[in-house]
Image (cartoon, rainbow over all chains, first blue to last red; front, side):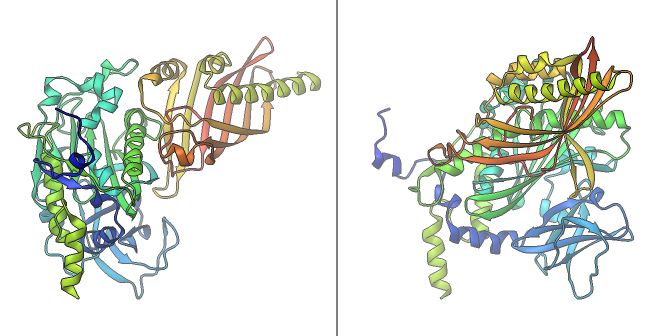
Length: 362
Length: 166
């Protein structure tokens, strides 16, 4: 194949693709906040962050300050414009607007700014958690890890790293512990509403020098050393690796800036020794000084740089069809189809359609 | 211990903490490990008001740390150098002269080199983390060595960082 010149580079590809405009335009970002984040169910925090009556935990969804409150064991969520702390005990809710909320999928607290949600959390997630339900819902879980990162990149690029798996080549750990026939046979499974999960395989932890098998302390009903992943639209990720569980939540701060919050979980019934084992296993891959997380953040920071606002639009190919196996881009195609529907645009040409929509509305 | 020998040991430990900072700044892991007892253990910890819990972000013994450092060249990492500004606040030598504890304040700056937009960012220094070193020492024949170090940081926001011990 001859090298592509600039004209070739910008021509319409013959395979599925999206435009990099999806990642770097302020109008699109504003529409995403309004049309997606202000409408979907958001997993804002975990019940174990607020065990006691009166405990509260705050977050921000679509620029709105939101607080989850433990009211004698019942979790209630409110819009709370004046909240000034991440957590605490004792909050006067007089005059605060109550939001719809549910506790679901391993004790996560879900809420939505939508005053009339058309779906329950169960209906919204529509089966994406089924693959790990027996593992995360059998025993009560407890959060043991929290940190956050603010990265100059688009929130979808972070979600993409959990959807396309060919970036696994940048992880030395994954190359040595996972790249075998079983890994390449993992399936991407789409669910309604843009969700995807990635089926499991056996990770060979001992292939990484200094690491040991992690079959001990697997989550309930989970065979040893398995690795499941649930990618929930529009940017929430749930990751179960053998004896530790992780969730990521994104808060878009601009078209090229995202806050990512990372949580790690064990079982509430853990002994101190068991908890230490889980914490160490979690940190070794997913901690801020672990083997993989930092590499992922380097990757998406680089993508954010090359696709920042003002750069020439280019086409991002989603054309790999490999029987839905691990490097098939079926998950990416599925996500962006849902994303386009929410915004009423084509991901291949989002700006032109967005402008048409604005003009039609005027 | 006499008052004079105790004062001398406190000074030796203070120098040891500063030598460790230099070795870590230079990625001279071998020199750092030479300052540590074979039973040395290391951790990075923090308290999260968000989840109201003490957390361990990283931990390992000397053997595990050496293994991880040996593997680093195989990993993609941000090579922006870290600079530790350490101030030793307290050194307490045990009455029997065999162990000691020390607490130091540490501020770590990251001098941007690569990883994001090097044309714009490189050369800039950013505050990376703040915290304390909580150190324990074993003293054998008048020579102190690190038995443990807890790097207790205040940060819970840790952006694109590094694989290195702090």
